[in-house]
Image (cartoon, rainbow, N blue to C red; front, side, top):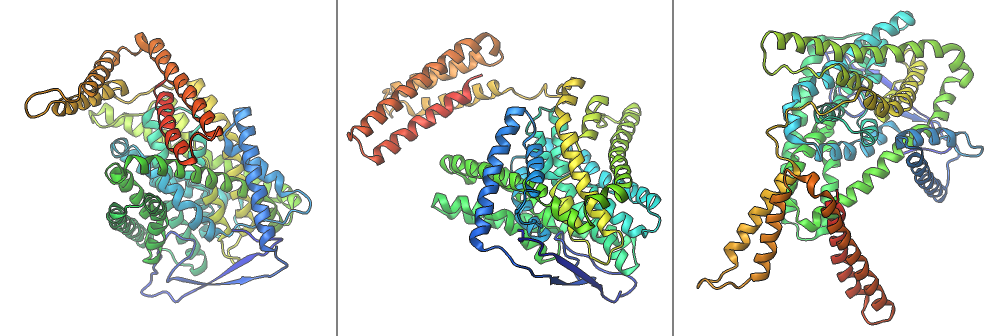
Length: 574
């Protein structure tokens, strides 16, 4: 993931002969296949001992915990604290210079984070707003790439157009990890949240493909818009097919596994299997992973048992937390290496600060222009009588425009730029600046902007059941199932307590549904009693164990029951 001191990887690309006036581009990984071959040269230096590497990782984990705690105390998005903290750690005397391996970063971190986002996606909302998601994930990324390309060429006319568009492709897609990290701290209307989350899942594929076409054009001097569009469709369709087929096979295997640990491990490995398999056949690894995640999330309710689902969810939450935290702290730690590449902070301030600032402003303005331009189109269609045209409104469009945080994909892709690409150092600095500005500025102000604009849910949810109404229907079904089994074949009641319990629960749920405000106090008091009973039971259980009256196995078995009761009561409290 990183090397000690500076072990730089200079990737030197050589172009192949162009056949039939065109070339082929495959995959989402940071390699250009078929049309471009590369050889990697390493400048070796004294590296850290493996034990020292582990010690450094351990220190980074401690820093993650401390920075996350500080972020919670200061009510900041954790990504902001981690980014700042990582940048500060990078300049501690004696600490090795960290240089990200971009290919390893993408293949290690991106698949599980994409899978996690896709797994928990609200499928109905995603399908409902797929046109808006694709508008952002494809249209906005292409539009921003063109704008940044034009602005960069205006600022630095000595740069070839293809190199300018390569920079545009680097900074154009908002990052899935950054979006997740910031959106977890704010509350958004359902439609707006779906658009942002859906965009972050798919736009990396667009940005990566555009980047590769731009770099290939720089090195070969050849570009075909028709070939690029056709190749993009091929990559996308191939990714969908690979993700769908692989997830289907994977789920069939998991259904036949009996061991809970094997099932959970298999669920984790699916993300890397989808990504690596797609890359191996030269299609989109990003889209393959997202497709697998969407299908897995849809069918997991029938594949996982309750025990597996609880344990798997807990495992995934911890793993995703660590991965996200590592990404942001590694971005901060890589600042020193980026500055070393370009000649130091003085070079950045004197030669690059102004054009970088203009590009960041242009990137932000391009997103506003695309979002509000789309709003104008939807408003026009609605005025013409198109029923499906439903503009977001000025407030929601403003938040959508402002929520364009960049992250690890932008930096990783920038680091893969061949040494021979003109303006490479400037592109690296711009990529890092874009990440800093969007995460630190937009990430910290997004919540305040949402509150200032007073956003409310604007989806038509009148046909949707509330949680309490759905719970009442669920409990009515449970009561019906118990009633059917509460009597024997001769009509004798054989399960009176179960029948009474489920009848009471169904009756209470029916009374509560739609009248939540009238019962909140009694409901909370009810679960407070349950929590007190759980605590008393746990205290007695521990007393028995400490006294030697019960063994460890009995303790763990009974404590698990208490834990389930406690989690249920805490979840039910309003």
